[in-house]
Image 1: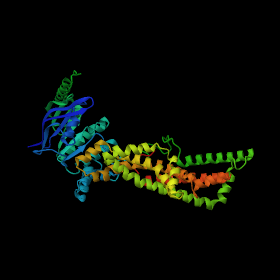
Image 2: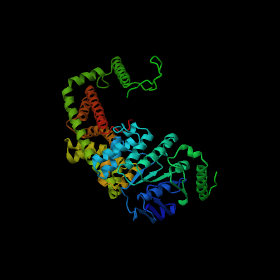
Image 3: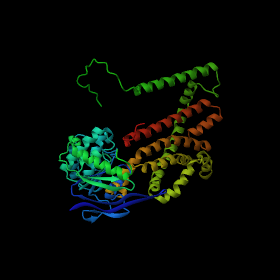
Image 4: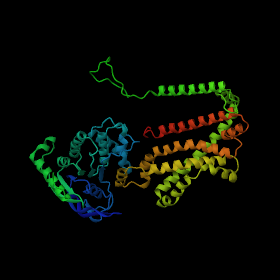
Length: 257
Length: 271
């Protein structure tokens, strides 16, 4: 059974300059607990596609089938992590994690227990009463991840979640995400513009090309789990990355470097 | 935060201090000493040049006037202080709900808000005589002038604050199908708080000016009235004394707002 099915989906924006086609005829099926990364250059519509999957943007044509039913409005079965942690500065780490639980009016005691467990899972045990401005960027993004998971959604949407972090923290958080995904099985849709990151994390990479945003290639990543940094230097990894780079650039009208 | 020496650094090692700004105590001491030196210089100049007291009184003459007139000064201080606080309070009570209404209603945003902003460029001093004409010479016209001058900074700051929620945060809230009330209470209003306080701090300083303007136009009490009266009778030391009281009031009110800000919105960016 599929978790999410994207059916001949298009999105067009109208502006003063004219109409811009952000997404062109997207067809994609995402399985239960699958880790899918959307990769492509800026302007390929990967973030737009993620927001359409979260029902934050309405498609111009086509539809999203979520758990075998058409998705018409946002569902609480989705957790979102953005590039910026956007934590509430006036709340402690724990209360930030609890925000979705409050909005959804979940059982307080249970939510708190889960929040503590999640914070422990991301290595922030003991930081519950701190405020966001006392944390590093990487730690803040970990809190944002816990906030996305607090209401135990079955789908996690991540919009370039590690793009604002330094390269080392970025690698570290990538592996941490995989470790969490192992414990908390979720369907993950992860947007990135980093090809190595896309390959290293994913079961499948969806390579997208710009103007108009379209799927250029879908690759099954046949690398063993748990993933390690060393895998980047294998021939298989290199052939994946070459292939993605080639399709992204060919469709973009440029030449592969 | 405590600073612990990492292992391997000996206690007798010469450690370079990286914080270069002087300590607050030292800053205050320097400022106080400078002020005292200036007052001393003024005293010496005034005595040496033998200026008449009605033209430029010496600091000691001002101090004498303040001591002689302390009860009158206190009484007038309280009048101006009440006018300022009542007008400022009225501005808060009216501005914040109005700003919320403007943010949530596109119609109000298109109709009322541009008019309010246009009104802001109107010199408020010019309206004070009209208030005196309409409602007489009691405390009310002064309160209204204070209200008028402090109303705009608060409404503008609140409007800006309420609309400054980062778009991703709004999307997150929308993905959870939060109600408009939840969004307002949990996200928008707390986000706006630091900017609202910035508005308060601008408004409170203007409020004192507004009260004095109101008193200048026509009053029987208040520090503004006292300054007018004292100058018309060439009692310049008293006028200076009243001016001193106004300055103290302004500073006190500003720091009171700042203190409340620190207690209510400790997350506001320190400036």
